[in-house]
Image: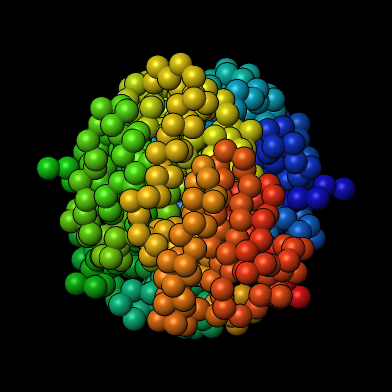
Length: 308
Length: 308
């Protein structure tokens, strides 16, 4: 059994799974460690598509770390990690988020504001002159596609495209745009998901000037497919707002092909939301052309307007 | 004027100065930023030797950051930085210490437990395929020599030697061992330094099971040269212990040529110190063969014994 676990955040996405695999491979080969990549949950539909495509099994799922040392990928905050993180030593981190971390000793912490952690790791492999196996390159390419929405999200940086191109070649992906669309579509099969799962799957809560604003996001290739289930979704949002005392609930429905979103807004502060996006809500709904990133395009204007 | 400052810690040493220069050059060329390397103090004798050798001026000294964004090198903790650090945005960090940092947004944080930050930066230049100017390579080589005591300190890692060899070649240093000895000796001209400066220059305080232990370190090529000034040094240590309520004061006098140290210990807990190093203090003095690193060889056994 490995004496070190490598894992990403809870509710794992493709970047968290691929980066755990890549980081474990990297540190085993470069630092001669004996690590195992694991996951804090089962793969989502998109990740499952990628694993199947490259003939890989899902990672073993753990709730707690049972090794003394661990490496984290795609997160560095305790709340997003294993429940017993404070009982173990974090020897290294590969990430691309804001930092909120303390260590007792010098450690590896490679955090770069790039499109995906897979991009960060690609350059670490290059740096170490370590070849990337084809199946791993395929997962890393999938992670870049997933986190950057095929290089279209505003979180995309100039370092992501060369990494994706190189990884696609190693993985034998002849046309990464075609593969990428298939991958993203695999993550948007919403028919099998409950309304509660849709609004919860990727939701985060934000305090905005004393108001609790819940923001969920659903990726799709057909926005109307989601709004066809409007009544069901509104019921689930309303129930959750009451149960968890959210003041406002915003569901961002993103068309990954057109790089546009529609929002559905319930609760208080509707005029504040209208002002933030310079739009008018009709039955709680509005179109936000060009908006795909919650982190870069939804949260900042809301925060500014709530605080104005 | 540059719109971004890059600087290392207070009481700058050669690695902090060289890394500020290297990081500023790197980010200006790779990220096309407009940064200036500055220092939080004047160069010590060793750094001055290196600057003179490579025909460079000392960095401009600042107390506060007067740009909105800054990059830190060789430190990440607020207490070691500019006084107004909390008023500015830290956009990036290159470091090799333990981590104690929070950011509001995704950022660059490259922390690796290597011998020097100059080593970390050498591999970032390689990664970016960016040539290092000869004078900068000379400063970076000096930093590696300084922080690893010519690759002899136990903080030395397998990544330091190849970096030093490559940098020495770029800098036109024909024999880096000969240059390194000259550099280290330049930092050990103790005759011009007051006793207070000797005990304070590199001292840090540690809480060990409720006892405040002050540990200073002086590098020399002749341990007896330091002990010839014993009365003067004991007086300075005693005065400081009283003024600052230290329970124990340990001065580590390190012979950088032989890689050995003698310690001089005043105050309480003398038997604990003896036990930690399995030695006997004679007039408060003992020899510790093979000990050169406070971080790796002095603090850990003391901490263990105080807590036993």
